[in-house]
Amino acid sequence: MIDGSNEVLNFPCMEKDTVQYDAVRRHYLFSGLDEETFDGLVPHMAVEAFEKGATLFHRGDQASNFYFVESGQIELSLISADGQKKVIEVVSHDRTFAEAVLFMRESKYPVTAEALSDSSVLRIPNQCYLDLLCNSPDACMRLLSDVSRHLHARVREIERLTIQNARTRLSGYLIDHIVETNDDEATVRLDLPRHVIASRLSVTPETLSRLFRAMSNDGIITIDDRLVFVHSLTRLRPYD
Image 1: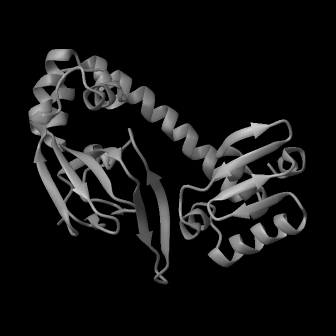
Image 2: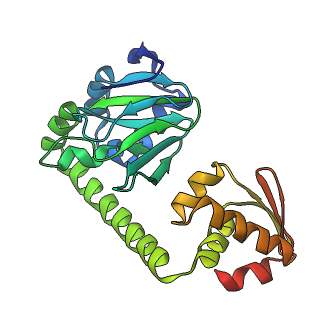
């Protein structure tokens, strides 16, 4: 089931020697395929455009496809037993999501996917891709390698969330999103809404606001809408 306003285009518009083709070709899910095999998969793909707030699929929907994000941001979330939404991940351009369902015994989406902004994604049929893997040992090995890297990253993220305190997690998040530095100063761009950042850091939006306010009062940062000006990386880093 796919909700929201969306437009489906014929995928053959993706031609060789284009930025779109090269971006998909470089992704680890496809880089292990030889050119002839990859080009055989291309006609089975489709481009879908989603407006901000549109739902691509709900948790529990039958999973027949996975997706490659061309532009925009896709939020993957769960609703907890007490009705609170937990953001699992925000997927941006040149990344895939829902590919894990390919290898699950029960082919249903484990999360809900929603467009955080106007987005364009490529829809790839699961069965078509699985058929290719069965005939490409090299692609399987590349996939296993990347899954191992992703697993390691998730273990480290869980460690940060369980061991480090909230202020430390926020400090690390700010450092990870620095867009410009000048000696001991830096500029951070907050590309995600505050409530999404709070969910990613496993804190409430109110707690996030208090943390920002405390750092501002301490003279460590100044906030201007989605820009955060760090006045002292030295003072920020002890919390990292």
